Image (cartoon, rainbow, N blue to C red; front, side, top):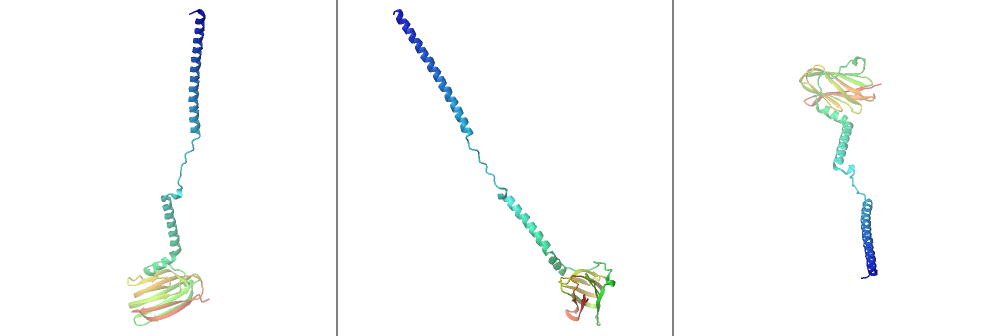
Length: 229
C-alpha cells in the first residue's frame, strides 16, 4: 500500500469517528429532551388536575339536629299552653280540694259596705250570713250551727266573682269547705264560723245566692245583692 492510500484511509477513519461522535451526541440530546419533556408534561397534568369536590351535608339534614329542634319546639308549646290554661286548671283543682284553716287575715270588714245580713233558724240548724263589699273585694262571714250534718252553699257568676280565700275560724274536724269556679260549699257539723272572700271583678250589681241543705233537701234559700251603687 502506497503512501497516498494510507493517507486516504486515515482520513476515512477520522470521518467515521466524527460521525460516531456526532451520532452519540445526538442520541444523548434526544434522550435528555425526551426525559425533560416527560417531566414537564407530568407537572402540567398535575397542575391541570381538577380540584377534589368535598360534599358537606347541611346541619339541618342531620337527624339529631331535627329531633332536637322538634323537642325544644314541643317543650315551648307545652309551656305556652300550660300558662294560657292555668286559670282553668286552678279552678278545677279547687273544685276537688278541701280548703280549711286560716288562709287570710281580714282587717277591713268593718270599713266595707253592708250588702245584707241573712238569718235562718230551726230546731236543728242556725245560721247568720253577713255580706259586705268594696270595689275589689266581697267578704262573707257565716256563723253556722247544726246538730247533724248540713250543707251550705254560696253560688255566684264566675264572670263577676272569683274565690280568693276561705278561713275556717273555729276549725272543726267534722266541717270542711270546698271551692269551685262559681260556688263555695260548706259541710258542717257543730258550731263553726267561716270567712269567705271573693274577688269583685267589675263592681257591677250582682246576686250571690245562699242555700242550706239537710239530707240534700233545701231547707233555706235566699240571695243578696252586692255593688248596689
